[in-house]
Amino acid sequence: MTVNLSTDTRPSAGPAPAAVRRRRRRFDALPYALVTPLALFIVALALIPAGVTIVQSFYRVQELNPPTVFAGLENFRRLFGDSTIRASMENTGLYVVIGVILSTVLGIVMAVTLQRRFRGRSLLIAVLILPWALPGVVEGIVWTGIWDSNTGLLNSVLNSLHLISDYHVFLGQNRLLTIFAIELVQIWQMTPLSTLLILASLQNIPDELYEAAYLDGSSTWAAFRRITLPLARPGIAIAMVQALIATLNVFDQPYVLNGAAQAGASLTEQTYYVSFQNLDFGEGYALSLLITVATLVIALGVVKLVYRPVEY
Amino acid sequence: MPQRRSWGRRLGVLFILLWSLVPLYWALNTSLQTDAQISSKPAHYVPPSPTLHNFHSLLVGSGEIPSTIRRSTINIFVECTAATIITVVLATLAAYAFARMKFRGRTLLFYAVLATMAFPAYTTLIPLYRIMSMFSLVNTYTGIVLVYVSGFLPLATWILHSYMTTLPVAIEEAGQVDGAGRMQVLWRIVLPLAWPGVVSTAIITFLFAWAQFLFPLVLSSDDSTQPLTVAIAALQGRHTVPFGLLSSAGVFAIAVPAVIAVLLNRYIVNGLLSGSVK
View 1 (cartoon, each protein chain N blue to C red):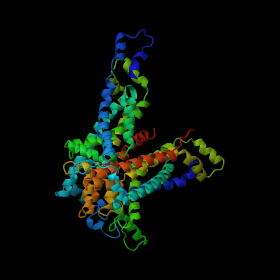
View 2: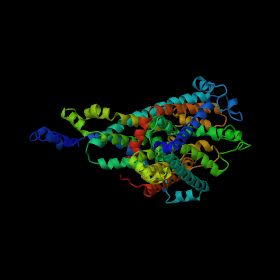
View 3: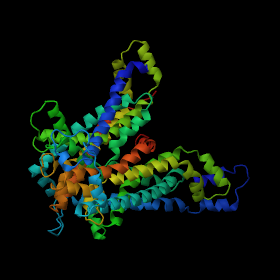
View 4: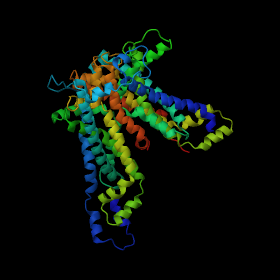
């Protein structure tokens, strides 16, 4: 673009001066200099490592048991033969389903709340994004204070309301309850971004559509179903994809909230244990590759299913 | 129309407030109580005699836990600040080239940047650990900062690129006619105009870095470099740590991002939306 500039800016100055013409033909090093650091980082610390993960998942790579040898599908076979890993696949499936559905539904509710301008709206948005901005690990600690079986807020409130007589253990006993309680913490963190993405779609909807609908006697609910929901689809699709990627890779919240009990261990947690406690990198690579492929395939599926370009 | 939904909206507003604030209030409430008060049944919904004792022991107390927390607080500041500065500088340079210059390989490199955003960060965890240990960079500031920068550069470049492409080219052309070099144009014209985008990118990068856990857990987990998040999780794993101290450490780790989020939320919202919608 800059190369064109030198000619564009003097269209009527007769033949371009020799210096300009020479500069145009000369190799322009500046853009390369500007993108080289980025390129080095991307290649050395993202693309090559990703390539290593793909290739080495077919090798036996054990830190304490060299050498590294080609093993075909051995790593994958061992993964699927391991009941802990299979259990964590189911757990991750539950995290994904609960997390994507709830964060999307809550995101729609909150985005509709914020759709129109009102006094205090920008302050409310500041409050809304708070949970998004905080570290997942610390959110795990914060929610420990709610779920705890001795001092937790939930037990205390339920007990004060006489809904329960004894304090309950929410984490680590019942698998489904554990997963729900842990995932709710991640939903707390993800929902602000879902809300913002959906809100961005809602704000493109012209007011006239609603005015026309209400003039025709539509109820609020009908307007929501026939106008808001269909036109928010692009935002909802992006919100679902980001929730999907986050839930498929959930680590911080179960790591903190699960403690030693493995009731709700996620796939990413197992990757960590396999690689950095058992030091079986080959199996770790294979597990990472599975999660990555699953993420990409399901994300594409969600986009195909939900995304519809909107034209006004 | 607004009146039609006003009750629904009031409920929604109330829900957002409770949803965002109750857990945070509860952590703050716990951190202001003694351990005896924390374990009372039913719980104290407001601190009966608010005390800064927990914070005091964290800040100036002796002993292993407070010194670990203090050390890891310094670590997290060093790592997040370094990663943010490097990321924003490199992303600005690259975004300027992508937005305003033609060069061979531009499209290819741009797609490579986008591709790295598409796959989950944890794909590269094990190889990164092995690369870092090959170069003896495990448990060093350099190692963790390099990994952060590589992780945040794609999104930062993308956000800044979206900002710069919306700027009118005419002003820059005028600058070039006046004889300014392209780097001068970047410095004197593009940067001031793109400043909100630069601030957004810096804030988002800093918050992402502050929230990191699995990468530093693997790459910098000893006392000398572990960030606050890793230190707190390690404390939580030991069941002997008093909950008041743990809560106040948590409030500590929340305070910085919370203040940033509340004060600078407009930059965050704009940055996130330009990064993910366009």
